Image (cartoon, rainbow, N blue to C red; front, side, top):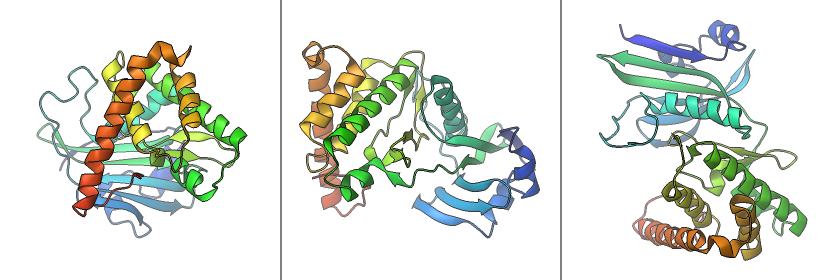
Amino acid sequence: MPDTRLLVDPALRSELESEGLLDIDALCEHGGLKTIKARLESRQTYRLETASAGTLYLKLYRRIEPEPRFAGLFARRFDSPASREWHVLTRLHELGVPTMHGAACIEEFADGDVERAALLTVGLDAPRSLQKLLQEDAPVPPARRQRLARELGRILKRMHDGGVNHRDFYLVHIRVGPNDELYVTDLNRADIRKRVTRRWRVKDVAALLHSAPGSLVTATDKARFARAYLGGRLREHRDFIEAAIRKSERMTSHTRKRLAQGEANYHVVE
């Protein structure tokens, strides 16, 4: 019988227990799971409707791959991607960064290692990604674009200043609420650090640029984002901006090669 570690929102505990959602075996056998993502055999994402807790999203890790020995050398280490995302969500709420609300994190241990894990989050009222909004609502009015770009810059600055780097900061991972509220999602690779160094700041900004080609995002949008994120005059940050652009170009080149080889990709590339 494996040992189980449970982290749960006290306000939701009774509802989750009453529906049998705090046990990984029960979650695996739940009849109401609707698959959202299933790119990896070891990890799937589902949506489920509950009678008492409403819409929940489940990330189910059927097998935990051990991290390389020196991975995250200067970042906080976690026993599973589920607990990583749980603690990142907690940190983002402390920083005032809009994101998902964690309902429960369940980890099953055997011989000191996590074998299976699950993360339950409360559904957001944010049906579209920022990528979809820019594609489907084109042309987006300038004033709206300006608000979105500046808010995204402020959000990333708050994250980095507070010690969190995303590592997958693409437009598809930013959800948009009914009043254009932006929410940061897909945090299973994010790091918590004492300080987010220039290297990791460049990587997050480069990922955003890579996912925001000229067909979706204008140079003015990018400048507004950069001013909100960096502060001051942009010419004072020329080295950083050029480094992020070079990194994004390498990411785009690499992605095009993978697409040419027939690999599916969820990010926008011209």
